[in-house]
Length: 282
Length: 322
Image (cartoon, rainbow over all chains, first blue to last red; front, side, top):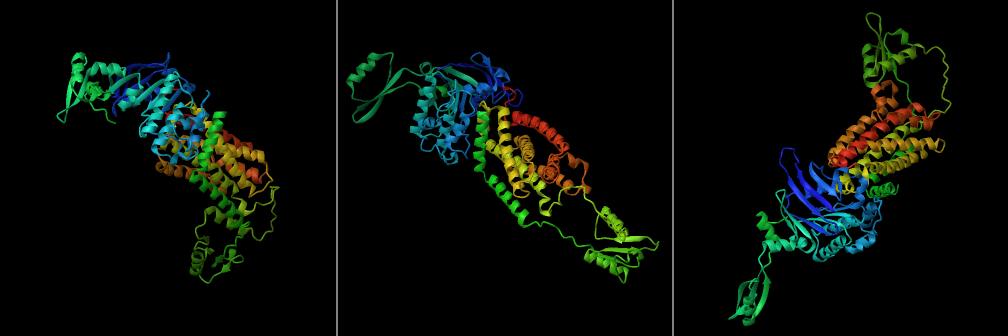
């Protein structure tokens, strides 16, 4: 479990906080989604949590241990996948994984099996410089998984991936939570967050604007209606019904030739816009 | 140990795919070829032309000219050394720009020229062939210094590829990172130095001492790379600063090859003790411990600075991680 309490960070020391009063708990065996557009402060928070940035104010606890007191050996329990793929381009995919695997003093996974999981088995012995961006992205992701970390930080793990690769990656991320890891997922991809995360936090202008389970947010900010499309005199006609009045819907469905029925549930993207007043673009 | 071995192994693989590594390796071969086929084993120094005009003290050892102008012309055009006597009766030596020391030595030798002399060498070894005299310098400034250049190249690549970020959040740690680089370059530097010694001087030297000194020297120059490189973003700024630093370091070679022009501060350059140590190991009676002390001082100092530089700058974590 990772607990973040009242986190602030000021890059210039002039009282302009990049992130302010950030508090949340990412639980073991769960996926915590940190959502926000570029510049919202997602990377700042993640970098403080992983120790890449100094903790200035507030607290970050891994279980009960403060980030300030952690030793280098603690990184045996941490895995980080960066948004920008950062691998040794002159080494092969296999060598990249083997290199990092040798650094850990905990049992590590077989590099070839990991590469196989993300469709890189065939390219295992090719130099990483010959990989496409998507392949390097997948290599960066599996590098973060090699030590079976207790705490996983994944920054835009499906960025630049084709749909089938993205599906493989999603499945892998889900497995990490299932084996008990705390997964901290940073993304601006609402669809990814919706399908994977147990909890999401909306970050805008360096503060958390809303935080809850995706379904709870949809209930809180969306409507409980449906849109029914019928064919009337050769024309498609849309009619809206509130699910609080099911009888009206039932009668309508019986009397008309229905083509399509759409849920009026709000998407996370719409909720983000409603909460922050900002679009969630990269 | 497994982690350090993995660092060494992968860094070596990266080196094998690095163009600069192969440039340095080819340079080593070219140097060996030059020593054997370009540089002569002995230098024939032709005696200087001595000319004089109305200088009876030097008339016997010089060619007498018909005028002062002829003497001046010979000095200017033929690099001769001329002797005149001025109005006050004092001898004037005209020369084409030699040092005061050289001129004085020449005059003294001419004045003693008629007396028979006997020479005695206190060095039991045979005279060192001319083409081998520069081997200590070539080992120091090629085999050892390549550790500096290649360590810097690997680190810059780690910065540019941002793999250093991945290392920061791994359990590698500063100690193991530095140890990995030192082991790699101690091995490579010693191998290169050993090849240069083997193909020039041959087998007859104390190889254990030679390899120990070479490993220490390579480690010192690799440490210099670890100290300097974290402060640069890319090859451009790094290369310029490195060139200045290495040029400064090579000034010890001036003092080594021409002791009369040596300045005190040249003795304190990191390369200086290695020049004299290699000279002793390859041609002398063995390593003098007076050379080892400055090496150890440099090692300690650079190890401390490299730790600070890698920890605070390269692996910058703001002190949150020990």
